[in-house]
Length: 225
Image (cartoon, rainbow, N blue to C red; front, side):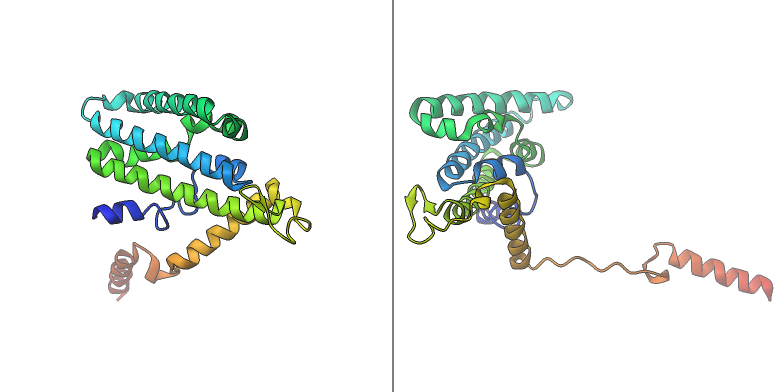
């Protein structure tokens, strides 16, 4: 896998939200508008990048039996630093994200990349993987935030949109609207990726013991003769 493929796989092919279906809770909760979506995406990407780099660098030192607790401690440290920076320089964003900012610690995307990629690959590849997955997560949040804010509030980044500002669909900013947009984007990604489910074969042709079964039947026929 080239560096470009490593980065781009997180955008569509292995998108953490729309393909792997990870981080659903913060995705639905923080995608009500574009600003909070961008903030959550940037914070998660920063934690992904830093944790992947450090875990990859320490992968030969961390004992295998305690790797998960070590990963969580490292991730929690980076989340704490990001949270402190957001509180200091973007208090409005901190209020918008609320409890979901510190909950990045238990985000399945970050721990999943640490377990599946960072502990098995080099620092550079792990950094690229973190950036790619973070970009895919941010892109998904921004798309969902755009759709939900435009149709639910009649604004984009807080700026009112003519006609829609007075004829908004308020349910789009609620949980049902979030699930609707989420399912819609998953369907679009599945269509674009072209992945079709494999048809299962029924009968003897699809049985792993078909060959053995055939031999037994032949032996039975000979015995009867």
